[in-house]
Image (cartoon, one colour):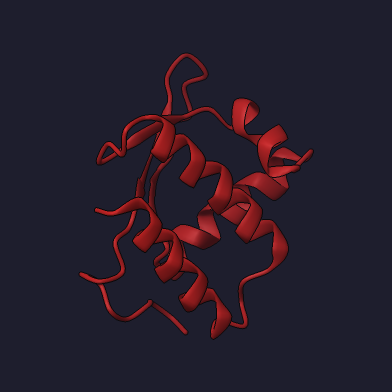
Length: 104
C-alpha cells in the first residue's frame, strides 16, 4: 500500500460522506501517522491515551465513538482490547481493493 495513495483515497471518500465530522478526521489522521511511523504494518497496536492528544480529543467517550464509527463506516478495521496492559489493533484500509463503503 502506498501511504500517500491511502490518504488521498480517504480524503476523496470523506468528501462525499455526510456522516464524517472533524473528530473522525482527526482520529483517522492520528491512526494514519502511527501507521506510517510504524512502516505501514497490516495492523497497528494502539493505546487511546497515547493517540488522543495527537487527535486533539480529550474525552475517552469521544475517542471511542469516533474510532468505532470509522470501523462501522468502513474506513478502518478496529479490534478493541479492553485489557489496559495490551494494545487494541487497527488496520488502515486500502480503498482501491474495497471500492464501496458500508452503510452510506
